[in-house]
Amino acid sequence: MALNSSGFDGKGVWLKGDWHLHSCHSADSTNNPVGKIIGFAERLGFDYLTITDHDVHVEGDVAGHTWSDPAYRSDRLLLLYGAELTAPRGHVNLYGSEPYDHQRFFDHRNARDWDLTALKRASDVHWSANHPVTSNHYGFSFDLADSIEVWNGPMWPKNAANVRVWDNMLLSGRMIGARGGSDAHHGVADRPERATRWTPEATMNYVGTPTTWVFVRERSGDALLEALAAGRTCVCANPFNPRVELVADTGGGDEMMMGDNARAEGRTVSFEVRLSEGGPEEAEYSVRIIKNRETFATLPIDPATRTARFTDTPAAGERSYYRAEVDGPQAAYADVPGSMALSADKVALSNPLYFNYDPGF
Ligand SMILES: [Zn+2]
Ligand SMILES: [Zn+2]
Image (cartoon, rainbow, N blue to C red; front, side, top):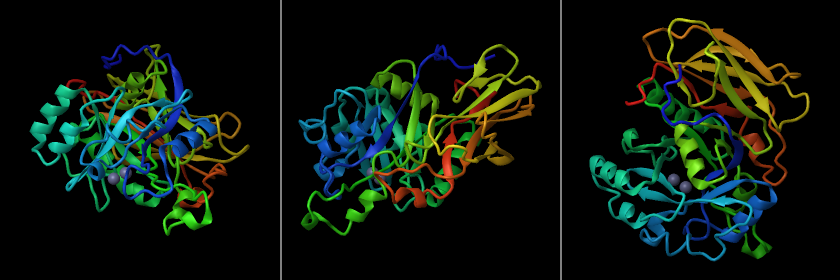
């Protein structure tokens, strides 16, 4: 039934973290040294982080700045190596589980996309399209992208347009894993005289606004990147909101999980939305199911079981995808209290389940 070719056996662990952060090595960051970010994430119980400073501020030499900062280490967090490729036609987060030659990407940031594709293939890096719809919109080909940032920063309403771009790509037959990224630049000022006009942002947008949960086969950077590309993730407005999973029973025995691609042969499929971990007790949530870019159903989530179920018959011989967005009250994020109102009622969103997608596309 499954068309996936990764050999992933469905066993693993959920890790939470943030894929997009700026430290003092970015010239537009304030009060945000590497050690402060990592200390915060450790204290809050995050599992992984990638500090992705702007490469343009160091002429591409992130290896000589962020990556070689003595504070860029942790005994408790998985730290990846990354940077924000900051080009005139858009921003891209590049990730590696080990240091890679970022300078080459910076030097070729204005190259034709077919030349960048060749460079990416030769470099074994993960290419993640950042904030597709902003003034720095993503102006590269999505055929380069292993994942897409559908939720940038705590503010939900502006991200609806990013999600639409993702839906457009999904509808075109591309399976692209979605992630969030706080894109936080500013830390709290340690002394009042250090405050800048940007300091108020530190209590609205910091590590985990939003949080990306990743289902990994093991605790390693390689497993994180593999799962991100495969779409085994969900995004939550903050780390204390419930995690959402969308699963399905196609009758073949194995449960489909997010990112899976199965053959549809005209049979009815039973879907389930599951919330787990965080969230205020007894909170009432609803879930909107999106099928092929359109709203398929809006369902209440049973507060007792924290599930919602529906059935549908994905058409034989045609591509279909289903994904979920959860609305409801925000869990309190005491360390970043200004984030909650900005996220409005968007609590979490899932990656899709795919039917009849071409794995070799
Ligand atoms: Zn950016
Ligand atoms: Zn950024």
